[in-house]
Length: 94
Image (cartoon, rainbow, N blue to C red; front, side, top):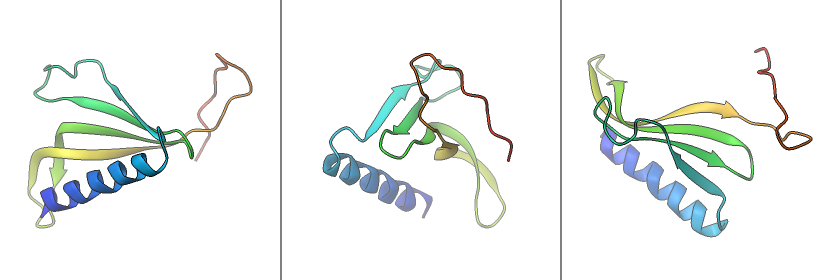
């Protein structure tokens, strides 16, 4: 079931990326070539500023409460544009 949802998510992102040329950008994260057993990538929505981390080896809680490792997306939040290159943007309080 988890793999089905993951595949559906990837298909949605892939079709959206084709519709908006270059909207989604993926950058490999440090340690992606092994480290703790899996690849990781930062995924950026260049139109709306949403950011996710995709991980090949993420701790997941199943609906029955059991925990296991598997592939997953972790939403990191939404970026806002800066006013100039190199600007340091403070994290906003929740």
